[in-house]
Image (tube, rainbow, N blue to C red; front, side):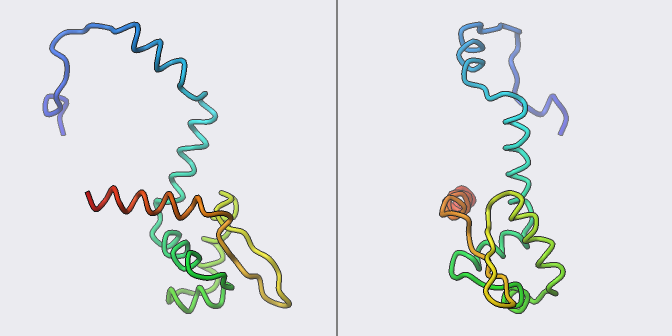
Length: 119
């Protein structure tokens, strides 16, 4: 898409009051970077599928691998990313590690994303 294909101002007029208002509420660069990294987590359909399973039940890697028709190594790799982002948590039960959502905010983010797609 060329720049001429996007609507833009015909003249350059800076609105200082709007710039000041937005600047006062804009997060710092580190926070914006962290937020962008978090949203990258949701950019992988395997991770979304894992989250959907965890919406319904706490499960181990073996169960996730079976449900998603993937090998345990691939599931473990995705769980590591989700754990680093603090979206899921794991606890040991005997020889198994049981995974669950870290909190319900994950479900809210996914639900809002689905609503946006459906519009």
